[in-house]
Image (cartoon, rainbow, N blue to C red):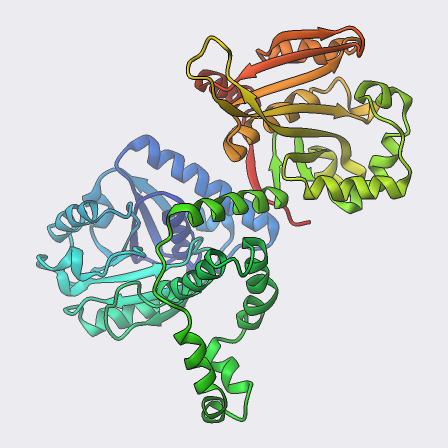
Length: 493
């Protein structure tokens, strides 16, 4: 029986996400892959992460290629020696940072190490291949094989030759891309931006104009794409769509060419993505993205508060104990739905519900895994009077509630609060925190003290204790160390 492993060697230069993805793709069909990076510790880390990624996609049923995760990883090795990496390789995929000086230096080194048949391919999305290969002895072997990030999940690869690239190398690169399961397209010649980015830039430019002119909000523009144009083009490209929207392409041109030209003439000059419009887009994007994220920690997962969670939340809030601790009045179920909707639309409130991660992973029942919630109320906070000049900082009032009695005493509240505090710093740019709790809630008071908050006020009439904490680099580092590993990823809903 023939071995599933190949003898041919492929070298990956750079061990980041794109480099690791390329390594997995080539190993998936049995190529002997060497990952190169400049520091041994980085190489070792890349190999460990690649192994975990392969095991993860195999477990999820999304592994690519013809081999198991173990078989694929057996095809991958690492080195911090460039000569060792590329010697006898039939193909080199470069994935170093997007700086022309770094690429020129690297390709100069590769020029003295490879033979006459090794294809040198760059993952660059920015530079035409002629810019870093012109002075090379082996320049006829250089081309761009530009993937879409992450290449393991998005198969398109743009193959772009330099003016001096031999056609047989371009052809061989395309064959390799097809063999490893990618979908290559070959440009007849190099051009700034290649194909994907030129199309992408045209879309970005027009969406920018629509925001700048006040025609649509950022959120609504993205709906135009995600719920309209993107769905239309997900399976058919624009030209095939046009062809099918009429009685063939010529009929489409007869019908719409004047309209398309006339509308395009109104689009104005190419905008620069800077200034107040850039600030507006960034602000709206942060608000929009924060609605659709989840935070995965060691023992808890924080998910957005959706309407599907309301009935469970309503049951919690029937508890007199929770009403007392949160200073809340009982609401009807209809009022609870209204409250949830208002929270989601309130730009000054960020709410996540807390899941018991182990229970959720065991059952896949999100409602059954709910154990509490955590909130940040965003507000301005003046600097201390002795600090000059006096300014306002963006502050957040943090709240935490573990509603399920069986989930208490497991440090879920501690971890969820740390994750929420870090989210406020990293995603909401908060510079100061406040916390207010009942003076009867000894556990909450101890927790905030352990989190290095300082008690600032006691209000006897409301039986409340206030704590504050400025955001500082050493505190952020401490929180990250306490929180351990966590990731912020899109929430599937």
